[in-house]
Length: 161
Image (cartoon, rainbow, N blue to C red; front, side, top):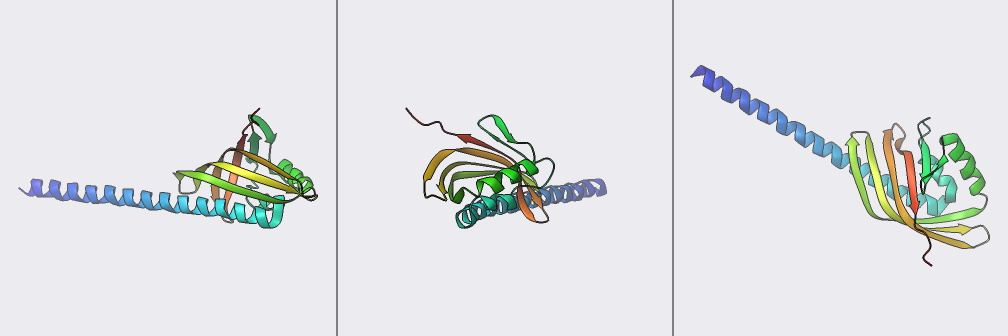
């Protein structure tokens, strides 16, 4: 009888531990999703306010950072991205970016995938507007300075003829 009680007690404890782990995991996932969505909203706000230079606060400064567009590697690291952004910022005064149907897939407590269709309007210093739409994916990592893009890929829709 003591053996049955001990097994039942052990089973209840094990079940409680497993359920506790699952709720911690769900809590972490919700925290990751909330943090990444907040970063995506901040990118939109800061690009509108500060133009292309705002991107630099969201690119990871890690040597692992890279960016691709339409299957081509555009920036091999943060330094190449920063050099381009500084030059680009001289010709573009504002970026109006909007995300649609954002997806956040948590890969762990400090890592996630951000995916979303997007609509972007670039407004040049001369007032010219260029519009593009497409799909964005990126790996996002939580660092002491907040959520940052570890890498990114932009798929731009081709103009319809």
